Amino acid sequence: MTTILGISAFYHDSAAALVVDGDIIAAAQEERFTRKKHDPGYPHNAIDYVLSEAGLALDQVDYVAFYDKPFLKFERLLETYVAHAPKGFKSFSMAMPVWLREKLFLKDQLFKELKKLDKNFAIEKLLFGEHHFSHAASAFYPSPFEEAVVLTLDGVGEWATTTVAIGKGNKLDIVKEIHFPHSLGLLYSAFTYYTGFRVNSGEYKVMGLAPYGEPRYKALIFEKIIDLKEDGSFRLDQSYFNYATGLTMTNKKFSDLFGEPVRKPESDELTQFHMDIAASVQAVTEEVVLTMTRSLAHEYNIPNLCMAGGVALNCVANGKILRDQSFKDVWMQPAAGDAGGALGVALAVWYKELDNPRTVNPKDAMQGAYLGPCYGQKVIEEQLMQCGAKFDTLSEEEMLEQTALALAEGKAIGWFQGRMEFGPRALGGRSVLGDPRSETMQKTLNLKVKYRESFRPFAPSVLREDVAEWFELDYDSPYMQLVADVNHHKRRQMSAAEDALFGIDKLNTKRSEIPAVTHVDYSARIQTVHKETNHRYHALISKFKQKTGCPVVVNTSFNVRGEPIVCTPEDAFRCFMGTEIEVLVVGNCILRKEDQDEALTENYTDKYELD
Picture 1: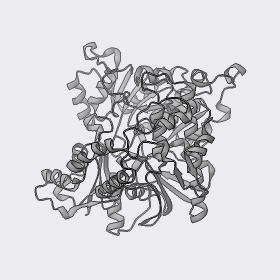
Picture 2: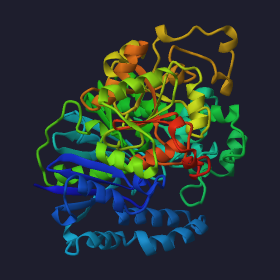
Picture 3: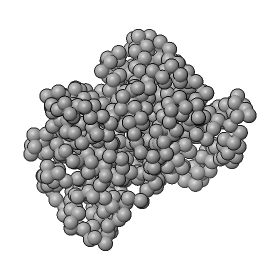
Picture 4: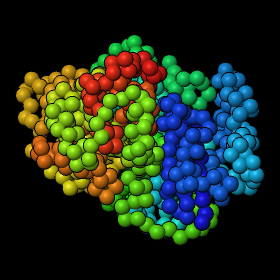
């Protein structure tokens, strides 16, 4: 038996993953345990969890692999500052002490941490992968493909920002790279910063805001900022940016180009201008990615595409790649960001370094991304009692019946079942659910449960067997990574006055039979629910369908804005008592808000730093 512990840490979204003889045993982000969003610290808790899931101690682990190479990253930092000197000295003087004190000697730091768990830990067991290879490995090795083109796109790893690899069997080789400072991820992050959202966490808000606007600035961005070639390679004009050596993403020249200053988060109103900017960068991103994928499909003549890296979470672009059909099949790693690097580097050691054969799972090897902690019924009841919760314990059939009835009555449901999801999406393990037929559910969940911007769309979870009836998609999307439109026969005919609305005024117009999950452009970020990977969630939606004729529920992550997704039954109860969720279902326990002790109510509106 060969056991490999993968670790990602010290940038954002620290995580740990455990692979045993090539099988993915467990994976989790550190933030879920520390309750600190995007926690970048050493993942003590995640490591403890993945080892305990396998019943192992660290001295039984054969290899520990870290997801990138700090020396290469330091080289890039140093060369960038030298190339731009004397510009950026302030940023340089702030970054260098941290690197010299902590990051440059990261191998020693990791070694010391690992020796705390195993005093005899040997330094030879500690391996380092390259950042983008870790991403590529996370995308290809668990995929359902024997052979694939593997595209990784993110901000920056060591030097690479974009890579193309070819995977076949257990072989994976990077064949093309685009290097820093030319980065599609950093371009998107620059516009995230410019529109007043937080870099590395607010990019999905820009994607959600884009349908409210028109891509009026797309041509200007292509004319001035990004030079896109026929093969999808590109260069960014660095005179508009400040991220290479400065403390901000963009500069005055960038703001002057578009005619407005950087929006101040939380204080400056979101205007039609910001919606048009979001629509423009989204359109540019889609054109770059489609140009790239079409060229790669033509060049390599391989029918399958795998993707990872932060840009692979742009599910609108992903949906367009699938519909474009340059590649017949696509698969995106559900933990596409840096957390997934922990899994990727562990798999890379097993397949590439140790040269073990690979058996392809026709579904994929991610087990629905349910790779986190699970709590038995006894533990659930103990934790709830310790919290002072009032609950009923029911049979599974009665629990499903009562939950489906509460959904049909329009109640917001906290749903906590089975293993926690790995990656940024709640997939029916740690979810808040609602009735998609409700015209008020989208606004209610945003303002009363999530405490976040009202424009943000929600995703539908739909039975896989029914997806083609309700959406323009007949394809597996278990990880909520593909956007497709609501079917025409499920849409509502709009009046001329409604059609004339623009911007945020579009929000409150009923567009379909499932308005709570229909975005203003009729799109939806779809999760297909499969009986094989999440039997209980499938059974709940089936029960809801029996009652209503609708095989769809609203699914959003079980947390408030700025909080990591809940991990434990105790986390779930606290969030339940700090929001206007009306019913909480944990295992076979059902809790109703009106039965709870009001003294246990929590104020969640200011509990977490805004994301």
